Image (cartoon, rainbow, N blue to C red; front, side, top):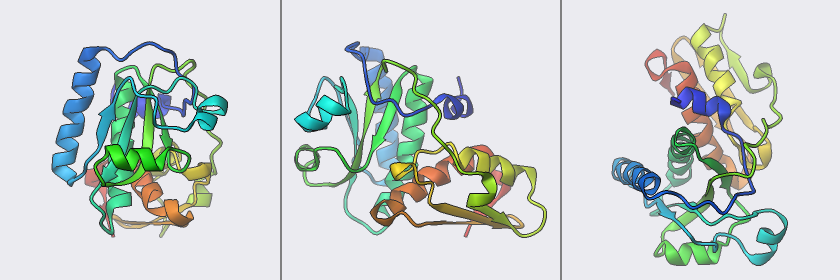
Length: 219
């Protein structure tokens, strides 16, 4: 399975089995995270056999069996949210290629606990990871024309990018973004309150994967 296959197959999964992550899988995830942290100046970390990502109520009604998660964190900076969204999208798809399921959580995690174990870094979310009880279902999406515009006839790469962007997870599934193109120049705007930066990063990664990074540049 490559990343494009993973993008089409990945869906939000909130309930997990008690099957532990094999040591080799943990090693591969940590190697990916180490390279990502070095490249982007982040402090993302994988926690395994740890049920502290959510408080008792959330675990009771929503987050069943979550024992492994990524802490999406880094030193505070104006672009931190977008960088973590972008890198988190890649991390989730990489996990999918390893046969795992994921769930990006931006609001209902145990923020106090996550900040403590992240050694004071700013935490923008957690990503549950493991073997899901199901593979999840596709989320409801907007139509391409509702989230995009292009000056003239949109080329195929742009249309593929929009289709991919609509597969990205966004906070509260709002898909509150607009991607516009002219020639090989592409811009994105997100309007989802405190989640706008993370959403921009998540959507950008997916758009790039669908469109091909060599076909355009962000402006």
